[in-house]
Structure formats: C-alpha cells, structure tokens
Length: 153
Image 1 (cartoon, rainbow, N blue to C red):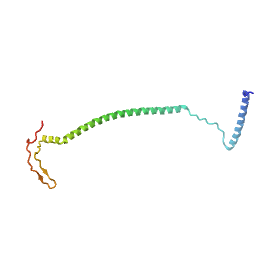
Image 2: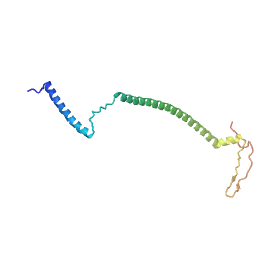
Image 3: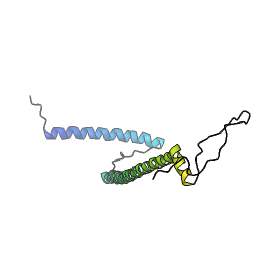
Image 4: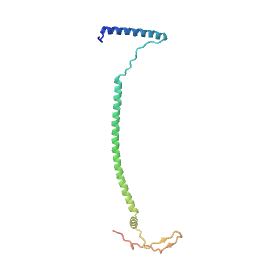
C-alpha cells in the first residue's frame, strides 16, 4: 500500500474542496446580501520597513549628537570649575594674609608702635578711675617725651 497519491487525485480533491467552499461562501453571501452586507477580501496591512528604519536611525543619530554635545559641555564646565577652584585657593591665601596683618596691627605691640610713630608718649605713672563713684585712684603726672621709652631702630 502506497501512501503516495497521484497528482491527479490531489487536484481532484482540491477542486472538490474549492467548489464546496465557493458554494458555501456563495450561500453565505446571499444571506449576507439579504441583510445588506457584502463580502470583502482580507486587508493586508504590512508596514514598510524603510520609514521605520529611517525613524530609528534618526533617533539614534539625534541621541549620539546629544551625547557628544553633553560631553563637550561637561568638559568645558570641568575646565571652568578647575579655574574657579584655583582662583578660590589664591583668594583664600590672600584672605589669610590680610587676616594676619589685621591681627598684627591690633596686637598691643602693634598699637604701641603706631602710637609712638604718631608722637604719643606712654605714661610711667598710670592713674585709674573707679567707675562706681568716679573717684580717681593714683596721682596723675604728665608724661615727658623721650623719658621712659626708647624706639628700636
């Protein structure tokens, strides 16, 4: 027994099937026409690949250009940050230098030097004032120039 059928037998059975299918569709079509419907062929919806590929490549190119621009901007900002940090370091050193100068000028020895440079004379006999009653304690004696302090230098 051979399971192989001849081409003629296949074509006959296929023809019979197509005739039955056509008559069934025709019968359905008549019923559908009575209702007001008509038979339409299947809609073949197949998106073309070219527009999709163009859109994907455009998005990819835009992303790469954006990444390059972002990288360039970040690099420029990093250079600016380095410059500003260098400037901040220099300004901090200058601030510390000026603070040291102010501390030297406000020290008792700095004040004494400036007072002597202005012609003031320190008093060897200090007098005190009691604030509670305003009484002067001690004997006030005027200071004489060049009597008790000698300038260095």
